[in-house]
Image (tube, rainbow, N blue to C red; front, top):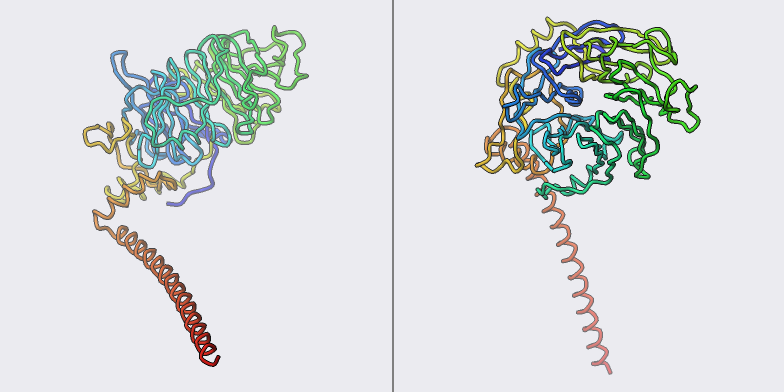
Length: 471
């Protein structure tokens, strides 16, 4: 199947079953709408640009858990349905889509390997439900926020070093507890361990934290509850989406001050439907909360979603609205802005899919996620999920697997007697042969050295004997 140049798109989801809507960021063209999605905040994620994943809200209060769904780009229905041991709220994935991390309703954090569905880690991170998860720009740190107002920073390197340890408790690197109410959003800047992060809370504040210093640098108080934050790529300011329907702008530089219109001196303005002004009209429907914010890759276009179901694309340089989209129904609580493959035509997609056998398509299906750690135990129900449809026709291109997963895959291939296992066996024999030849060369050299020493000793003894006889 032929693919055109990748297109930057906007994807949104809702807490009601309104599916996932998608539009071209530049063109404004609506793309395929994915069905059957009712996601919690921060519960929609792209897995390495290969497919979509979303945690789901429970169907009813009596339900014990909720699912995680996978969609391919070109099929409206979900294809894989997994049932973790507890309901998952936020999801985050690394850039390559190697790992999927979820925050649980009981305060635990789950880390799965996407290629195998293996649950690698599960640890108790917070005392109450996890509400936010974000990775640092170098993906070495995981930052989590929770309903208890606490923010914690975790080293993924230490977690992976501790791979064999199945304990449910792990030490965090930093813990911030200055928020008095639920953490609603977290955004990380550039610099890895030396970056700043900005958090928002239902306590009407946003706080700026230094990871290197381990302390709060600034607290900004807003007129309304803040549900979403977005950081200016230059890190000169951040944008705060509030429940009064406004998007406020707060300065990060030391000299950033307002003209006195706002109670907090660091609020320097806001976005309006007309221009960037100090007294504003509400950019979204009056009284409807701005629930999510995301910058495009150019660092200029800011996308906002609202409880009124509208999506607005802002030019932050010109301070005006470029596009307005409307979700099918219900409020919006998730926005993704990223590049995804653009296929040449629906007919080409259908033709390519029809040419594949069901068996081949199933081999590309993203696996369901394990429910428990150590799922190799036969008494544990490790795969509480099911494939709903045939997989998408793009290879997952998963390049990384953990050691124990690769060993298991090799054993399975060897048992099946496939051509791949034959190649693996042949490669193993080649390595064994190479090692044997190296050992042979070492023994040969040792033999030659020993022979040389022995001959020299014999010659020395003959010379000594002849000298004594002549004397």
